[in-house]
Image 1 (tube, rainbow, N blue to C red):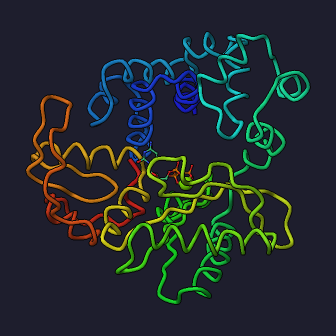
Image 2 (spheres, protein in one colour):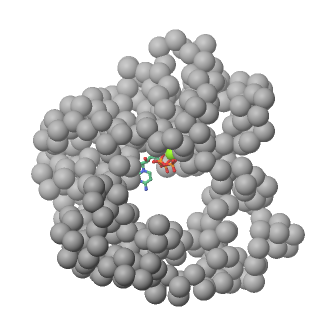
Length: 321
Ligand code: DCP
Ligand code: MG
């Protein structure tokens, strides 16, 4: 719990590397079957480095961490943390508001000039802050699946993200929409031209927070939905996946992010490149820079991508790193 509070702090302050180290460390500790009581014991666990082992020993001996007392004090940090809960608000925006003197959500609501989406994020702050129970994620998926399949019976809707990893609750709902022979444009136009307008008419979709043609290469729709008979708005992502990229997209959108990172790193070590569209080989690099996209080895089949990388198949619920 103490390390988790440190992790929350580093997440809030955007300290990328410490965030990773703490997540790894906490997960490694959770997997231990007996209590870790010293620095040496902590240090012998893969994933726990020197400095984290020091902290673990301190927690064992004192029941708290000096550093934590310090980090908890910062008032500005608490404000920024609160602002970061506004959907679509990143660290830059949160810090900017804090620097402009806004101290609370009601400050923002009353005095700040906000974009339409920021205003919605603020109005629905408490909705979006709540975790979504597994069963409810499933129900949102079913509504979208029904709407999509009433237009095209062969179109598939798969619930990805933390849900696919078996989480009891999720931060948002990630739906992959795909069909074996469909192109990106075909999936996109079915969803954007037909299904999304229909789901708005039914009162299921409430708002589009990012319109697809502006984000990335137009491969998703992001917004909010409400189940019939309920009032809480949930964050919903519709991800358009061409049939040929299904396996790579499944890996990417199943996560978790750290598992993805290690798969990509492994691909790189083997002279390949893994992204959400496929596994590529013969990629030429100049340091960090990719000089060519390489040749597609596999995109369609999730298991095959594991095989080519030489990684034994890992069911989604074991992809928690
Ligand atoms: N993803 C990633 N790297 C990121 C962000 C996301 O690899 N920086 C991938 C892995 C995630 C998936 O996309 O599992 C979905 O992203 P979410 O932010 O929705 O994360 P989760 O679904 O895992 O968790 P949550 O319950 O918070 O939604
Ligand atoms: Mg998610």
